[in-house]
Amino acid sequence: MSTTKYIFVTGGVSSSLGKGIIAASLAKLLQARGYKVTIQKLDPYINVDPGTLNPYEHGECYVTDDGAETDLDLGHYERFLNVPTSQANNVTTGRIYQSVIEKERRGEFLGKTVQVIPHITNEIKERVQILGKSGEFDIVITEIGGTVGDIESLPYIEAVRQLKWELGDDNALVIHLTLVPYLKAAGELKTKPTQHSVKTLMESGIRADILVCRTEHHLSDDLRRKLALFCNVQKEAVIESIDASTIYDVPNLMLEEGLDTIVLSKLSLSKVSSPNLERWNQFLTRHKNPKHSVNIGLIGKYVELQDSYKSILESFIHAGATNEVKVNVISIHSEFINKENITEKLSNLDAVLVAPGFGERGIEGKVETVRYARENKLPFLGICLGMQMAVIEYSRNVLGLEKANSIEMNPETPFPVIDLMEDQKSITNKGGTMRLGAWKCELVKDSLVGSIYSSSNIEERHRHRYEYNNSFRKQLEEAGMKSSGINQETNLVEVVEIPSHPWFVGVQYHPEYKSTVANPHPLFVAFVKAALDHSKK
Picture 1 (cartoon, rainbow, N blue to C red):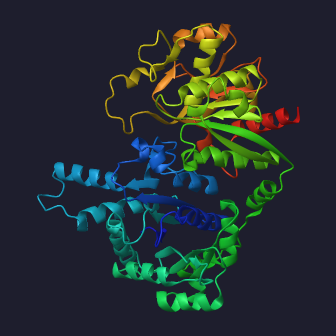
Picture 2 (cartoon, rainbow, N blue to C red; picture 1 turned 60 degrees about the vertical axis):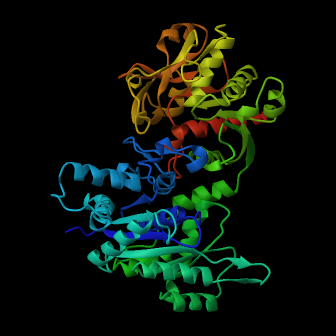
Picture 3 (cartoon, one colour; picture 1 turned 120 degrees about the horizontal axis):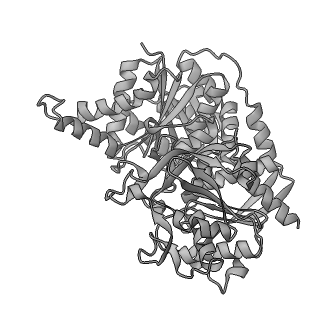
């Protein structure tokens, strides 16, 4: 019998309260006490995964080592815990129904009528327990997406009710995250929204064991007692989650509130030791006390929604702390960059990163940015599409192939320096069919990236359909653009750099997906250091 304990995190009153950060912070505290912890996200939308969702709609699509396209909260989980997630850590309604329908088509239900209860809820329960039954983890934290009361979330809430009853109170608990708003006109915090949210949860048959209250002001003892009385929880189980200056403060705030202590008590787990957060707090100290600052331009197509580049922004925080530098990220929309205004937009920067993306919009602005960085010796990092833009720019302005382009942007280009990958040419379905997950790459000795990684063999995560066209490789290398990282299995060029430039690197993969608090990504660390060196000049 599995001894794994299960924690469910639900949300009420409003979306975007930070269930993912609370889940990750609790996991960090439990991990710091010596427990093996993982977190999964159950998303109530009907898409099979976020891979086909517009970044404006959903934010960043995060990719795991095993090639799962997942919710961006999995990025928070990995950054906090420094433990890789997988396909099993993110489940959507689309995936649940797809699996149940496939079972029905195979006749696995023996002619029975397929219903939400028990078939859909059984599938959800099975997915929740996959990680627990693996034997790898002592505690599995499951974040339920959406808000209690949403039609979409009802099957998940019902599955949690069933599981909590089946597992018993010592093996499962529910944390309900809610909002305690401050009414300026009345000059007080209001508990009524939380009361209604808890009531809605109870109508579904679930009693919250712990209440985490998002607030802009401290909760008084009287208010905590009132919430405990009305919401049927112990007073010490009313946890304040006050607004923090950085998400990385939240584990310490939850420690002060005793969230991990009451969780361990309710799950009948011993407090084996006090949490060891020494390394975490060293990072926080460096992050909050920078000795220098740099301005780095983030050139992208989705900059209006910062969540579109969440992992990149967090990677800059990790790399900034390592260098004791405050990284001011200046987001610039590539659609509004042209030859006339580029100097005005980029001249105050210490480095530029050209971000990933898809489609034709804003492409010429990205190409123009690469040209400016190359000609003005500005440190440059291109990720995925950004790397492809670097190849296109070099082909046009150094090789003289004026109409060089990617097949994605112009299928008729006479110089397709970026081409559709061979195994992608017969694919029609868009979801889950790109080159995904971790792939090996061999770095060339005596290259900039080789010195950055201090290794000749690396493994990085990918998410792309188009690739560097090897037909142009000889021309590009002879003209000064070095292919310094190669996947030996596919002969795909993964990294390009310009040795004559102080710091110019383009990578086909996504280094931002592997940067964590404990292990900042070396490429970002080196890039921020290059920006600092440039600023000093």
